[in-house]
Amino acid sequence: MHMHFVQNFPFMGILLTLICAVLSSVLRPRAARVVTLFVIAAVTCLTAGTLAYTVSTGESYVYMMGHFPAPWGNEIRAGSLEAVSLLFFMGVIFCAFVGGKERSFQDIEETKYNIFCILVDLVILSLQALVYTNDIFTAFVFIEINTLAAAGLVCMRQTGRSLVASVRYMIMNLLGSSLFLIGIVILYTITGHLLMEPLYDSVQLLVASGEYRVPLLMVVALITVGLSLKSALFPFDKWLPGAYSNSTPTGSAILSSIVSKGYIFLLIKIFYRVIGIENIFALGICDVLFVFGVIGMIMGSVSAVRATTTRMMIAYSSVAQIGYVYVALGMRSEAGIICALWHIVAHALTKSMLFVSASALDAASGGTHKRRDLRGVFYRNPLAALAFTLGGVNLVGVPLLNVFITKVMLMEAAFDAGGLHMAITLTAMVISTLLNAKYFLGTIQTFFTPKRDEQAVRVKNSFSLTVGLVGFIVLNFLMGIFGSQVLDIMVSGLACFV
View 1 (cartoon, helix red, strand yellow):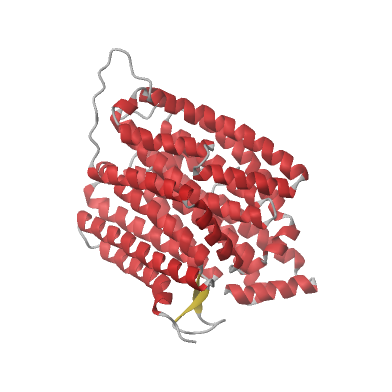
View 2 (view 1 turned 180 degrees about the horizontal axis):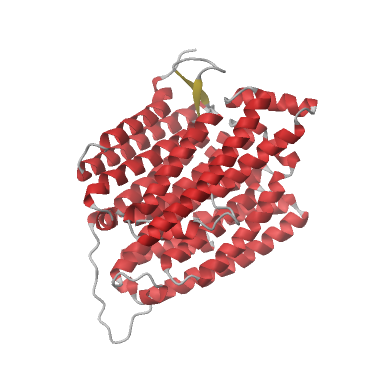
């Protein structure tokens, strides 16, 4: 079959990122930064081309590396769902990298800045591979690359707390990787395949014949727990607050928005393309995810209310928002899966904006990290305060913004599920939303409350910070305005996922 040139774009993006990561290791810091910006721009353009092609054809396609067919060769698979998700993720990485440039130069030793750029390149590399890969062992390889790069981003500030947080992150995430690897080993033992299509066919035959029921259940449990641990589903979230709050603003934005979301995207891909979503529903694993997702929604919000620093509050909020994703997965319906995919992207856009704007607000308030010291900060840095306000009210669920769409979709999925699922979901959403309103709206209120007897001194934002914050604001509004079109692409892409 004739291959169009555009079908090479996903592989070209992966290869280009790998080459530039190696190149950055021998460059000066500022040159490495230019190379990373080039990688971000190039991968964004290639992803946009892939999205346009897959939307126009209405189908996904498989790219064989080296043109060796299954089961010997390695493959990547691209469709509209993969491309639209990756396109938003690349927008987040661009805004986070540009918006956090000044703080990154301050927080990171100049001689190590090119290492920081390499780590960002490796995150982009592994994200592309996790989104596109058609081979489950290749997914494990890039999970490890992602883990090492993320741990490096956490400790780039070289402070005591960041080093401790990095070690904790590494230990917990390597445990998740080990569980995932054991699951792959058992799956390969009972099927003899690593590519996803042959794996899916073998699993369907095993389910139909009733063979290896216990090992297959163990595979699902190990892979699900491993990726849930790495994406910080409650109660596996203890590493998250320290890692997110002690990294650089760029690192925090990428960790919270990209790294954990890549693991959840991979989990959904495995559910559909390896085990079969009907088998997942039948095994009852979704009910377990539902229970822990509900607890995470509430406990993450409670911890955020109690947090004293802005960045710790945002970090604990991530636990609650990841709970929303797993509650949606626990609905055992296509509507729930679509809701989870939507919220993966919506949360990525919002949370990264919160971390970058929070850093600017802290800097405008004398370098504080305390929420109570941000009183009147709007008058010192209006742009950062407005960006934080947009992110905060978005996560609360104000209409016309993208997280409001998440909550509407989740309620619809809950009503479709009915019974206990509906009652528990609606109750948890009410509690979580009220808690979100308490800590976000309470914090935002202090921004607009001027200090007595103090003349506010306006902080002049750097050009890069302005570009990053404006970019985040535009991306959030675009996703809300064109929400129906994005949802249509996700729905049609999910239909091609099997």
